[in-house]
Amino acid sequence: MKKIMILLLSSLAALGLNAQNRSIDFEKDYKKALKKAKAENKLIFLDAYATWCGPCKWMAANVFTNDEVADFYNSNFINLKMDMEKGEGKDIAEKFKIRSYPTLFFLDHEGNMIHKKVGASQELKSYIKLGEDAKNPERQYNTLKAKFEAGQTDKEFLENYMEVAGGAGDNITPILSKYYEPLSEKDMLEESTWHVIRKYDKSVDSKGIMFVMSHIDHFSAVYDHTEVDQLLYQNNYAKIMGILYSKDFSKKDFDIALIDLKKHKIPGWEKIVLAADIEHLNKQKKTREMCELAVLEVMEVFEHDPVALNNYAWMIFEKSDDPAELTEALKWADRSLLMSERSFVQDTHANLLNKLGRKSEAMASGKKAIELAKAEGEDVEDYEKALENYK
Image 1: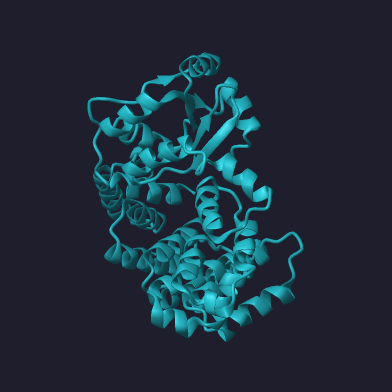
Image 2: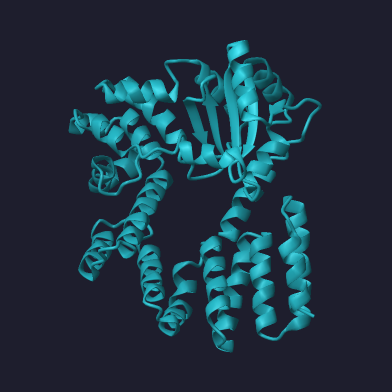
């Protein structure tokens, strides 16, 4: 989880956005904000955050301090900022069933949710559009949801609703099912349908993904084949891991799913199979067999995947004390650094060196991790603490 968060934060920091002179004026009292919203006939913009949330901090420093964003929100909304793990924030988190941070809400003066968005966008202008959508009944989350539940299913409406509901973090499978329902094979091959599948379909068993799998040559030839490959890889990976961690896990279903990967020639099926086999051993707590399998196959299968190489190197660091396995994992970290010199990979490299007893090299590598982290705009506290272990 630490490394996933680092990836997200570093990608946001890389935008190089700087705070300007103005910032959003946030209220801190919920009831006061409701009264003010009623008096001024405005919606409330609520930044629902948690203190540990890195993207929340990034938005506070780089988005809410942007002149254009600040002017728009100060003019159009009563702005409220609340920690969802303290005081009234806990009640709000429970009321709106907040599952991830940040979540941005737009409320009426009675505290009813009108519109919402999950996550921190990298585009400043998207925050302006978010506010405009919140004020537009034809784009408001609650309005669109009500129309869908009332039976509206025309193509344009469903595409609109998918965008808004997806941004709100909802499961859009029911919307996709209605979208696919009337489509012929010719319709499924059209570019507009491909864009919907590519952007919104996350279920390998859906009509859209199954259609792409059975017409993979067509989609790869007509559209960007890397996008087609990535879509099928991500969805099939999610399916395999879903089976693996199902409460009603069936080894038979697991094996059949792996065979189907090869049968349909899913791009990157070798990666999915190896990742699934390693994770299956991990689930069974067969640590020794898991490490042995990784050492045998990871470099060959994930040679060009710096993130996977780093993740498996870290796995060996955590799970193994075998010098030969740690040395092999160090090779993966070296290879990962050649392709992507990132602080979190350098940190893995340093930890492996330290576990191998190569203290001076670990210290040098750890210092390099700190340099990289500072350049990436990341927190270096954990890396600095790690240096103490290398002495």
